Image 1 (cartoon, one colour):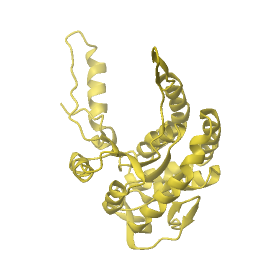
Image 2 (image 1 turned 45 degrees about the vertical axis):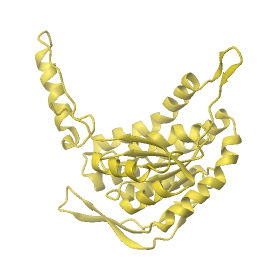
Image 3 (image 1 turned 90 degrees about the vertical axis):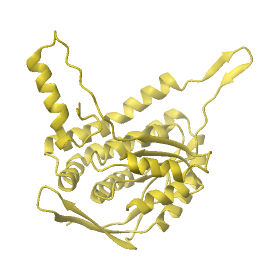
Length: 283
């Protein structure tokens, strides 16, 4: 079993404390994979570290931030096998799916850089009127279990590239994935506090919604939890909330289709990852 290093805050791991947090292998009769600790008090430390680091990070040019993030890209690539192992153990995914997820992490850096270059250029929009983009400050990311690294990483990289610092909370079902990701962040030697990883249950997420330093929040997960986040944030109009919740995806098969291919795609869409993905074919 991997050694629990704790939360990753301000460029260093903080020894586990608080309530026990245990992950289990759903493909091996619930065998214990990883044990660590969780405490909502860690959110204040992580958000404070991010808020302190963010102004200097935002002062860098986009190219300078991209160069720093390239170190994270290389650190993830160097740890691809260990990251995939964690996904397999904590989600029960087959290894080919886990390896594909790591590939999406590596690809995200170039995709985000291209998107920022094409969509956030700003400039004059009318005589005497100019559009300028400013970072929010600290962005919180709460990820789900089904893509435990991709759906933490995908919103974090654009936020970082545009000058924000981040606090990431992986799913409470996949804390080893979160620790492995934090190990890659540590190896990348980014400025302390720019990326923080806090492990825990819904209490951690609730503390992130409430913390005044966090000005943006990205959540991927269930409709029920997303609704609670909106309710909790109703008196925080300064908090930009982005929710990716469960859907009911419809597949339309037309009369002139290649029937064999259509059947294949419907079945793959419905049953890949045992159907536990937001893109799963449901109707």
